[in-house]
Image (cartoon, rainbow, N blue to C red; front, top):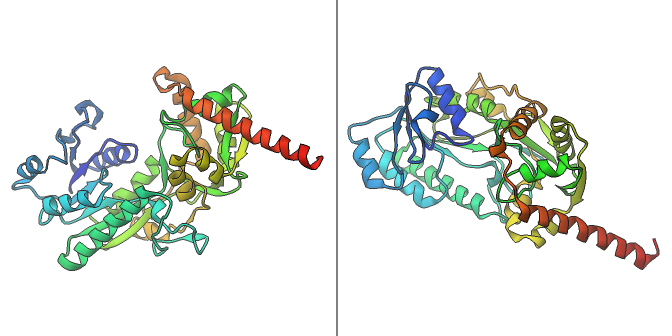
Length: 341
């Protein structure tokens, strides 16, 4: 199988590239930021920018692929470019969308691929929905051979996923846990969330590549493990060898304090997520999630604790966390005083 991955060295795509190479695919990665040493042996690198449409079109002259997968499309105009570039050049075009596109608030607890797409809280999700709509229209009108993949919260062994963090990643939360300082958990911590290790995600994704039954279909790829945020933070604490001190804060209060959190919270992580994965299991029989979150958390914790380069300080997020926790404690004390509690 001849495959072209655009942006094939990211959090989700790196393990896909590795698995494709292991299976003996004829692999090409198009990524202007990638260094050759980051790729498995035998993978061809086109070190160029997909947004340089003329240069990419010239490179594609005389080329044809069984699969093209683009991991870095976020806007409908990106889709228009790819339709121009890859029409007649591939037997399958895979678009990576997002499970955050699913209906908020939901009308049913179980998420299937037929759950409506609507997210009033997050422009990122609405843009992905618009991309899906354009691709679906092109498939119906002109037979452009699409497959839409909707990941949920996917992580790897170099990232501990948290419900809230600053612009510099999760180290600040990890450091606070190690120091016995409170860390923010949304709501009362009992809403359910699903996280999928990138190694497991790759198995489902590769099973869709070149799969004629996946043409014209949308499918999410997630673990069957749904954990509460309290359980998630407990697992992270266990991986670090500490008992985390949890500060439960309403997501709408957090968004009021910092409006840019609305999309990731009300538009995603504050909602209960339980996925029906029967479709991906039917299309990709090899797909099974073998890495539980507690196992993945231990792998990521080992990386953070042993690599100083991962320990990126984030004083702004520390100040935000302290201010939120202090404000909530003062508000509770003021109410108790007012009512004589």
